[in-house]
Picture 1 (cartoon, rainbow, N blue to C red):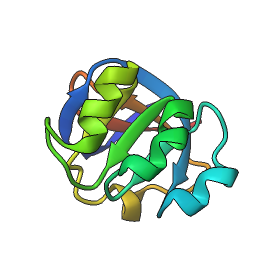
Picture 2 (cartoon, one colour):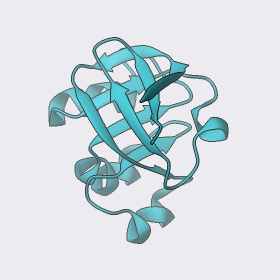
Picture 3 (cartoon, rainbow, N blue to C red):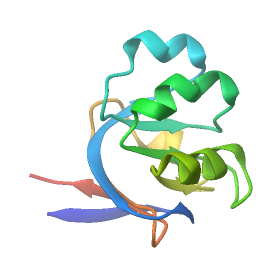
Picture 4 (cartoon, one colour):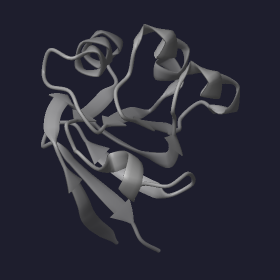
Length: 110
């Protein structure tokens, strides 16, 4: 069962499901596992290693021409930006679905 929990800007199309990893900076790189969903305030060039492993990216801020949006499109990774509250609502290990075509994030409930 899916529950809509966030809306933002559809920055890079596609859908991805995975576990949340809330990231503060590139210092979190060693803990980031392939296929996790990268959740952060805003990505920057020091986060490219994590971004390349992520199944999707969700940010608090940003638009269609922001760093996460552009890099996600280049990498073919699903991305939703400008959710405003992703880093406070989403917690490590939560299972979510990211819809980068509609700009929506869903909680997967068992």
